[in-house]
Every structure is written in structure tokens, then in C-alpha cells.
Image (cartoon, rainbow, N blue to C red; front, side):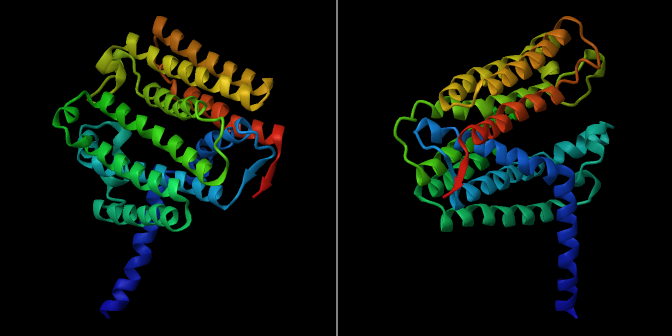
Length: 324
């Protein structure tokens, strides 16, 4: 009977894990986002190296899938690291935390660690067994850096920093995704003439994620709670300028690359327009704050979709693609 009980328990754990993923990492949204994040670095490097039409093969598919898995691992790491804090915030009545799966018991930390091990096995196993040398090194080394980042690199003073600033430091680990996409390019395509372009390509998604991270944690003073926000740590006047600054950095990185890669003027115009809308919204809140105007995260998400998903689509449309 015991083996049967164990077998019966497995589907229950799988259902709980699936419900957690659906709640905290909705696949319909975040799988395309992860793939766009990969291809917005991987594809531009090809025309910059005079590789036209664009090539997408098995390693590129592995790279896109691995980026999605890596993003999910960061989500799980985040929830495991913050489980105690999230429970405390829910007990204090913060609506942002009351329905979280780790708070409601929809999934236990033990189950979450089990899911983490499965996803990590897929991520590292796929790259070590099927990837090239650069992919192996970047995947293994990159995840080690990610894990260390969630443990504050074992430097105690970092853990005592204001919470929102510490979380921003985690988001900046997005730079590793860009380096990984470059590694896939190194393993599949020639690398001459593109070294300098890798810098803005890697920094752009990092800046975009930082824009979203800061935008979603800005509130008017009367709405502040024990929840850590940038407006609480820095003051709402200063905090309002952060997402505008990060969007500006992202656009400044992407536009020269897009022009050199032949993405076309329509893409450049779309990026400028999306950035202008985001910056205008930040300034509007800065000079005339209100609860409604503090909701900046959607505009940051729209900018990210236009900037990164748009770049991949523009290059595919301009240069074409072959499976190779």
C-alpha cells in the first residue's frame, strides 16, 4: 500500500506545482517574454556579423527555452528567499501578499524546492549535454552567480540595505540573460565584428527590467505601508525619475544597434514613441502625483514588449530566417 500511496501523492504535488506556476509565472505571458528577451540579443548579432538571412536552429531553440527556465528559477528563488517576509506582510494585511501561494499554503517551501530542483536539472542538463562550450560555461557560471545574488554574495551588509534597493540589485542579474544569448551566438555563428555591439545589447534588457521593477513600486505617500517601495526609500519625487532614467538608458542602447542591424525606421519610431510615453507618465506623476498616476508598471511592460519583442520581429521581417 505504501508504494501506491506514494504514486498517488505525485499527481497531487504536480498539480500544486502547476497551480503555482500558473499563478506566479503565467506561461502564456512569460514564455513569450523570455523568448523575446533571448532573441532580441541573439538575432541582432547576426546581421551585425553579416549573417543574412538570419539563422535559427537547435541551439537557438535550446537557448530560448533555457532563458525561460532561468527566469522561472529566479521566480522560485525569489519566493523561497522571501517566504518569511511575505508571510509577515500578509499577516499585516498587505493585499499584495495575502494570496501568494507560499502564504496560503497552496504550495509548501519543500514542494517549491522540489520544483526548483527539477527546473534546475532541465536547465543545466540541457545546456551541459546539448550546448556548446560557451553555453555550458555561461549557464553553469551564470546560475551560480544568480544563486549567490539571492544570498547577497554572503556579504552581511548587503542584506541590511533598504529592501527595494536590494531587490533592484537582484533584477540587474538580468544582464546574465544577455551574456547567455551572446554565448549561444558564439557557439552557432561567426563572431567577427560584433564585440562592441554586445555591450549595448546586454545592457538594454537589464535597463528595461530595472524600469519595470522601479515603476511597480512607486506610491503616493498616503498609500505607503510596511511594503518596501522605492518611493518610501528614496522619496516619491526621486523615485519617479528612476523608471524614466532606465527607459532612456534602454532606448539609448537599442537604437544605434537597431540602425546598424537594419531593423528599419518603423522599429526606431516605435521605440522612441514607447519611451516617450513612459517618460511623460513618470514626469506627470513627479509634478502632479496621484494614486492613478502612480500606476506606471503597465507602461514599462509595454515599452519592454515594443523594445525587445519588436526588435526581434523587425529583424525577422527585414532579413528573413532559415532553419540552420
